[in-house]
Image (cartoon, rainbow, N blue to C red; front, side, top):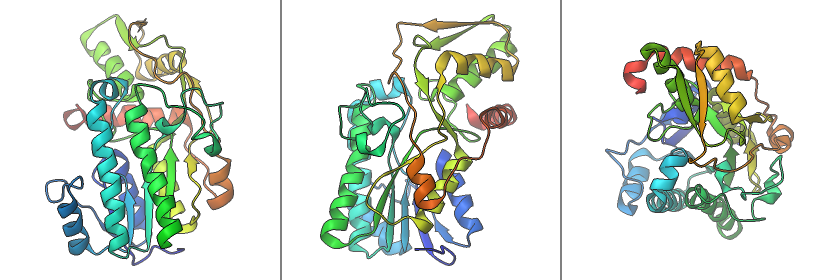
Amino acid sequence: MASLASKRVVVTGGGGFLGRHVVAALETRGSTVLVPRKAQYDLTHEADVARMYADLNPQVVIHLAAVVGGIGANRDFPGRFFFENVMLGALTMEGARVSGVEKFVGIGTICAYPKLAPVPFLERDLWNGYPEETNAPYGIAKKMLMVQGQAYRQEYGFNAIHLLPVNLYGPHDNFDVKSSHVIPALIRKCVEAMETGAKEVVCWGTGNATREFLFVEDCAEAIVTATERYDDPEPVNIGAGFEIGIRELAELVAQLTGFTGTLTFDRTKPDGQPRRMLDVTRAANRFGFRATTDFKTGLRRTIEWFRAHREVAV
């Protein structure tokens, strides 16, 4: 596709955590960015999807809209997470095909990988087992977007690509205690413990699970670069290429926030997938993406943003 300058690009979920950074990256390319709001268009309803395409007439669609959350939210709302994510993906891509959209960029999830996939995760391992149970309805729903894109490419010649971002963090993340992921949850707990004088912060699980984290601005850059340069059917991992234990992560967040109390791990709560780290070779080879934000630097920026925006972050 090459240049996105002057292209009309719809970003579903463009007002969200990742979406606002993708919108900013597109604007630096000179794109005309269009963000459909849920109040105007409920993309789980076919009529709303058709109206959105008629109103906005995009040439490119980057589909970020999703129902997401941490382990607790995935465990509590598996039916909703499955249904809404399937419908969001299926209807938005079908609408794009019918409307003659030039390119569709589907955003999947690392939760689509099998629970016990060899580390680092290679794209070829996506189908070699069932996902971790608490994430499975969400992960499988998002994996359907990849299958749909490959099927549409085969039958209709539709240019759909599929990207698999690792866990994200950064400014504008979700810091809600009931639905946040691990980094914003730990930041909020440590900051609030310091403010209240609490001597203990309780973390979910054993602390033994590992995760990989990508700074949200790096992910946005990867998505826009892939939109410009990548046109193949194979899915592509988007990550930073490192692995950190949850206990080590909690200690690092405590250090960077200044919390000096005790970190306690609640083993009655689930760990989720035992290990997560992506092989990021394909992204580097196919469209030249490599993460550039150092992890400590990204954490510091996230903590600073949270402290400066508490009224909108919680």
